[in-house]
Length: 421
Ligand SMILES: Nc1nc2c(ncn2[C@@H]2O[C@H](COP(=O)(O)OP(=O)(O)OP(=O)(O)O)[C@@H](O)[C@H]2O)c(=O)[nH]1
Ligand SMILES: [Mg+2]
Image (cartoon, rainbow, N blue to C red; front, side, top):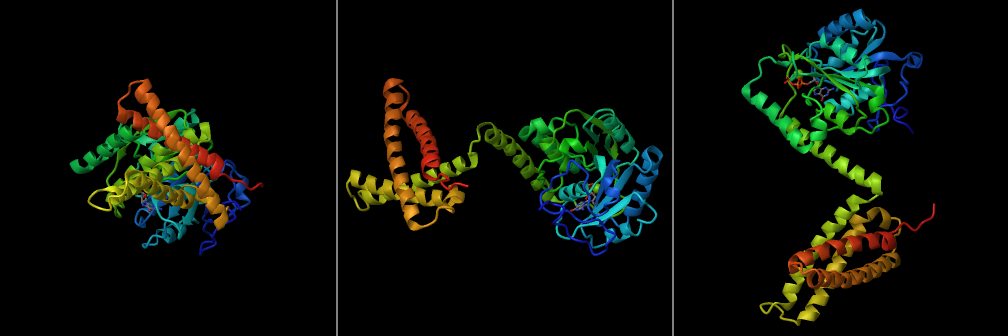
């Protein structure tokens, strides 16, 4: 079932259907709500995300329509994506439909958030160029034609920027300027390959070629859709056009501290994606499982240590060293097996249920761990006696190698998928 067959009808039949499922933009235009129009390809689809912009919506639609009618008449569409605003922005926008034939209005009731609103709008878009502009008149419409021109001239992405010539902010306080630049600096540190490609990575005003982002699963957080586009898209040439970010004259800002947190999480997500995806694609390597395996191993060290103390310490049971160690190690192995079976390799073990199967895995796990101990001693000896390495460093390297060995052998021989499809 594709994203467009799982659609939900809006209350008013005039409103386009709201796509659900993955945030993936189709390469081919496949809007199902207007089958006759859907075969027509337009040059530009501009999404205007709104939340409580009832006082601005008429003005922005009128300004954008006037402008685009002079440049690409009947070759564009404006898509308002409203998140069921309490001020009924969607209803006000809907009342404009008869005056503005290029306008479409989407009312989302199941999802929230600026970035996903933009993508939902692009999913029903019929244009070859996709764009976004704020609905509060802070983005000057005139710039749009320059952005369009840049794409027509070969750019994959054209960004309206406050930080190139002709750009700026009107009356921002010192604190807001500081936060904005601070966020950019943080972005440059965490994700230079993405954030460093544009002067204004926080811009919410840009155009992008459909082919540059089609068929990619987008996964943005909160506000910063541009980061997602540069981070995941196939973006070659980028152009920037300066603009002055105007002050709001009506309506309220939705920016809160939450957006700053989401921004940092988004950067982290994009960054780890790069690495994880690289490892996964190049080596088909289950990196997440290895991380889990490592964490479970760490928990085993604590179990082993605690029990070893309880059994062997003169102040507690004062049992013999070897006996205590064997028991502590075995309990740690049981602990590790439990977590690996229920967490690290959950998807695999859930297909091989039953106590006899589980017992078999436990015995194999024990055997592999035992081989791991032997390997550990061999490597330790080689590094310490053979290469003269510091004993603790040698032990650390031995532990790292053996953890990897344990993981790999367990993956290949123990928690392996045995069913034949
Ligand atoms: N659909 C939708 N639109 C949103 C949401 N949050 C904000 N918007 C719209 O996105 C645009 C930008 O939001 P603003 O709150 O103006 O953010 P900003 O322009 O960065 O900040 P200000 O300068 O404080 O206005 C506006 O058109 C908002 O109405 C949301 O959750 N859903
Ligand atoms: Mg705004």
